[in-house]
Length: 355
Ligand code: 9MR
Image (tube, rainbow, N blue to C red; front, top):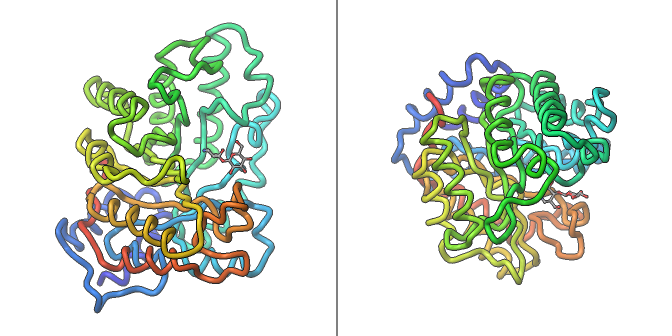
């Protein structure tokens, strides 16, 4: 029963040992080519995504979890969460070796209580990085700090995280590596070290490389990430997914080749997840763009989930752009309806990342 997939996915999230078997089971039940027809139309984002074995998630902030309307919308519509800031390095290890998990724990507990998946965001990133890390001067010291941080966080939530953004935003728009403390002290190999460390720390979590402005296959930055993934796959470095942040706006619109970009990543043997989706606007144009994005994901079996970067517009990191699916009164915007019908229109079910 397709309707039970959400529940099964939810349950297995709490019983990580069953995950692989259930993902394979879900794929088997749905079949690679199964299309969900109008008769199956679900009435919430999460349930409609689950019809093809996908999730539909939101970035959430722990300090909103005491607001009834926020929580009601989250619990009704979404079956995955990403902590917007609470798992970042400055929040979790502000002082070397001294870890703070309470805010992120609150989100994880809420999500798991509701049977939602949790995306971990993020382990290695140049931003929201405490000054003690930026101040480290030797390769050995940065290596120890980085692997220690990955091990601590991934052990703390071992078995509870569906996918981790292991490394975030490592490239510049030119395709060159971003000059971070990790890059400048350890060198090019730091990404590989991070992924190998992550695999050992939580073998059940899917390991993602996550970035913005990699939505167009022709951009230099996208090509640099293709090369990274191809290289890792060739050499057996663990990587399971690429996160397309997909922060779209007037100067960086949804590219016409978005679906092809997703296909090209998938063809390298990784899942694709849309991880921080936002598109400014309020009417038909915004709805059309959201539809385009969801249709592109639904067309590719290995595009396994979509996360919007917040719930109501006024809590967006760019509130003036009103880039989300709910207005500040939690009313559904036209973009919401577009997303729901695109999800209900179906598409090929996802292929398990590692079976
Ligand atoms: O939404 C986040 C905002 O609350 C923070 O102040 C900001 C700090 O850089 O980070 C925002 O989220 C970022 C995300 O974690 C990674 N991709 C870019 C997002 C916007 O900066």
